[in-house]
Picture (cartoon, helix red, strand yellow):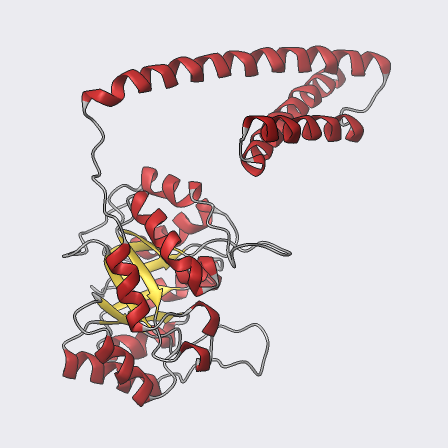
Length: 351
């Protein structure tokens, strides 16, 4: 993938502004309050809403307000696009940066439509992660844009949807954007703590985590009167609150290649090797169990046994002060591989 540089004059690169452009007065008030703080002023003009009757944005009328921000305050502006028409209108209005939203990223047909509309353009385009935790879908959207000649690309991590009661609006699942960074190290990576948190009181800690993980920037929704916002009022901060967040962020050195870490890394390598040996031994026992199940005519999956394993995991985590959810994910992966090994024995036998 060919990715050209997007100038990040100051780290973190800040993209800030209201969730939605509501009226000209609101847009100008927020933009003036953010003058000198943000690399880009953001405002949503077309808001994807599942249920009719919700505020779906002011549409192209808001482009005039964004132009005013750009012209009067010399402030680069950014907005979300979801269709070819959005792209054409935004480009004609001189919008400096576009982003593709999470719902659009999940639809290859929509992404391709946007890519075709951007063919031959030199505007930076950022792509938010898809709603579900699917790294290949995220990368695929970037590739479609790149194949259309868009080389000034970036990614925005806004978390992933899950069902039921939850602490975050969208689970961070940091391992996915970190894997994206590993695979595309030249790609600028921005965190959207507003959408991850769903509530303003968590934005500071999430912003710090993103910086600790070496993200290049932040996209933070900012409104002069968040309580009265027409969309996502709970997750927006005031310009003053944004200033406090930015002042409190601790910036750490990227490099950790000095010699004082080496002894610890050697220990980690030894432990990892021991873990792999234990997992290999566990799979060997699982295969032996699979052969016995095959001979006795038993099914591979035994729900009661799985429940026992998870309970033991939880009990051990409590004693060892380990994160139960993280350990559960690890044990589920190990159990899934054990199931696969046993199924292979049964399938090989049928051949």
